[in-house]
Image 1: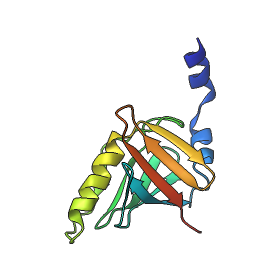
Image 2: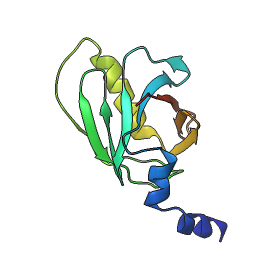
Image 3: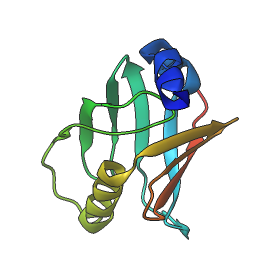
Image 4: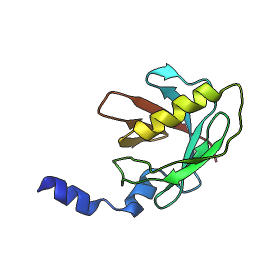
Length: 125
C-alpha cells in the first residue's frame, strides 16, 4: 500500500525538478569510491531523457524510472576512439547498472543494490 502511494505521487515533473534545471549538467567525481580522473558528464535535458559526454564520446538515451529510482534504456553513443576509452567504458557500464538516485544540494548520487555508486557534482551554468 505504501509503495503504491509513493509511486502514485512520483511523476516525471518531480524527476526533472529533482535534478535541477533542464540545462544543468553533472560531472562524475567518484566511481565506486575512487576518484574518476577522466571527464564525464550527465544531464537531464527533457522529461525521460538523459544525455552527456563520456571521456571520448557523447551519449543520449531514455531515463526509464522516475526519481528517486534510476534506469536507462539503450544508450546511443558516438564512436570516437581516444586514450581514455577504458574509462569511458567503465563510466557507461556503471551508468547502466544504477537503480537509485539521490540529489543532495550540488551532489547527485547514483547507486544500486550491489553497492556500486557514482557521485556527480553540479557544474556551474
